[in-house]
Image (cartoon, rainbow, N blue to C red; front, side, top):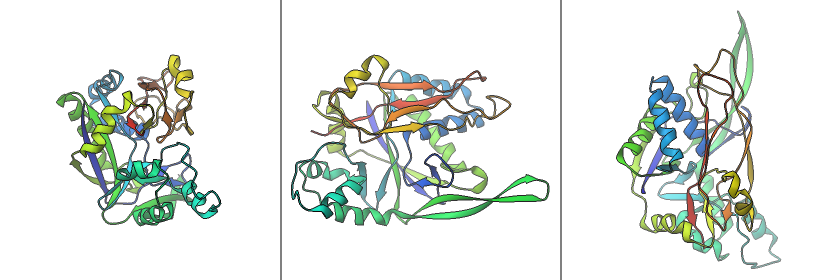
Length: 310
């Protein structure tokens, strides 16, 4: 597999949902990003490309990480869900900062695992990413009648944004991903298009050798961390949970395809392991069909991208 980084610099505020419109996040899940690409390919009339993309994912020819933050030249990974060596047991402030620390610079994984990271300093640096804002919007319910609603958005500061890592097997595979990314960059991601949220410019970067090595070594490692929301194959669930550290996320929402059916349809609720979850045994993950009886499948991305963290 080959690797690329896609770095997104946002031209507008974003709304990365956390289950309702009044709360937002500053990162995006891989399943949300994959679904958004499929929606845009459908709107462009590229339904065959959606099936090609889904097949490539099912055959493990394409993998992608969640969208993680970057601040300037510092790129972040999720905090590994591993019990750290106990140092300064009575230092409650240090413990508090470690607990609240969501991301660590990708070059400081070893430092974190050894219990030597300055959590307060890293939280301060990450605070430079941007800021939340609550906006008042209006919705036309009936003729001449508008109703306000509130939406939380996130504004990235200059030289800040998110990035994803994509692994791929062939040039045809990565061209499919880039086609979806280009379409999304024009229309926006992470918000209702009518409100003009989530538009971005993107650039492609090479993956640092040290990180590529950790990705390539992951399946042989004694401890590995997922860089995306994921769900083991049914027959590997018990093995995956054994000795693991994880957080479960409920994934839901409505199907946004215009051609799926006449009325809004809710996706089947699923529970995934969050990025940062750590395991002792590797697994491939799944591409779930979370639709119902509509006109086409509705895919939920739950494949793995593992990083060595021992």
